[in-house]
Length: 409
Image: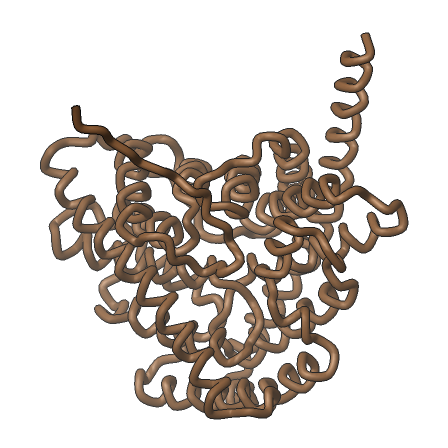
C-alpha cells in the first residue's frame, strides 16, 4: 500500500513537472523563433548590417566578459549540472543568451538555435524551481525535461526531443526515469508553438524506400561522409576556439576577430548564403537545386566553426543539419541516388555522429520526414555514429563504460 502511494505521488509529480516545464519551453520557443525570424529577415533586407559584425562581436564579448563567466559554457553547463548538481544554471543565462543570439544572427554570424533554446529554457526552469529547494535528483530530472521541452518547441519533434534529452547527457546510457516528464514537456512545448503557427525548419515526406543491396553500399558511403564532416566540424571549431584563446588574451576581442574573418570569408566565397541559419540552403538541397555550389557544405562548416569558435552565440544543431543536408545532396548526385533521400539522411547522420545521439536522430528523422525511409535512415545514423568515435560537440557529455571481454578456452 505504501509502495502504491509512493508511486502515485511520483507519477503526479512527473505529470506536473512535464506540463510546467513544457509550458516554459513552449513559451521560450515561441519568443525565440519569432525573434530569429525577425532578425534574419531584417538582415536579409538590410545587406549592410553584416559590416557591423565585428562591432556586434565586441558587444557580445564585453557582455560575456563582465557578466557571463559561467554562462559562456553554454549547453555544456546544463549537462554538467545534470551530472553533478551544484550552483545551478545562472538566472542571467536566459536574457544573456537570448540577446547574444539575436545580435549574432542580426549581423550575420553563422550559428544555430537549439543550444540557445536549451540554455534559456533550463535557466528559466531552474530559476523558478530554486525557491522550492529541489533535491539533486529532482534538479537532474528538471534539466533533462527542459532539454526535451526546448527541442519539442523549437523543432516540432516532441518524441525526438524526449529521446535526445534522455540520450545526450551520457553517451551509452538512456535515463528512463525521466521519460514521462520529458515526453510531456516535449509534447506541450510542441503544441504551444504549433498552435501559434510558427514555422519550423524544413520538413517533407520521403517516399517509401526498400533497403536494397544497391542502396546499402551508397548509404555506407554517406555514413562515412557524415562522420568525416562531424569530426571535421568538431576539430575545426575546437582549433579556432583554442587559437582565439592563445592569440587573443582579452576575451571581448575574440568575437571581433571572428567577425572580421567571417567578412573575409564572405568576400572569398562571393556569397552571403552561409550567414545566419542558412535554412534556404537545406530547402534547396532537398529540392536538388543545381545552383547550390558543390562545396557549399564546406563553406557552411567553416563559417560556423569560425563564428562559434570565436565566441558568437547560438547552437550547433541547425548548422550541422544544413551541412549534412548539403553534403548528402551532393553525395546522392555523385552516386546517382535520390537527392531528397540523401539530403534528409545526411542531415540526420551528420548530427548523429557529432552529438553521439543516433537513436534520437533516427526518431527526429522519422518525425520530420515520415517513416518511409526508416531502415536507410537507421543504418546510416548508426554507422556514422560508430565511425565517428567518442568525440562530440558537447565536451561535458559523459561516456558510459562498456567492457567487451572474451575468453579463450
